[in-house]
Image 1 (cartoon, helix red, strand yellow):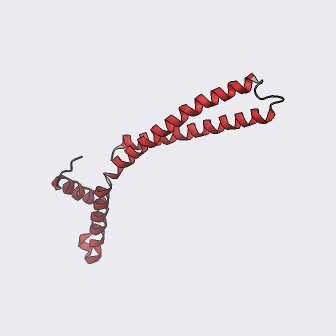
Image 2: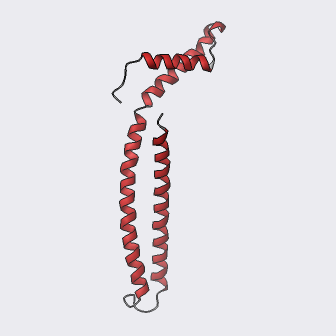
Length: 129
């Protein structure tokens, strides 16, 4: 029902994927530097710089992943609030559709169903949400 929740969830998933990809690239780069270094690791200033950048970036990415996990929980909680409405709507739809099995006179179009659904929503007890 709330399109902004779904778009926020998709955006969040894209950010998480991008952050995980960035972490993988940093790990690969670091491993390559460690395996290709000649001589002492302590003397290689470029390797030390890569380590520092990797550490800072990894901390930042991990913080973003924690925030993303918390946000995803909030989004999923908000989405679950609509599940009872969806369940009742589907029950109502299939009951009305199967009424045609009782008698052909009870065949219902989608437009008629939507009108019935809207009326039932208007007459129902209002939620706290």
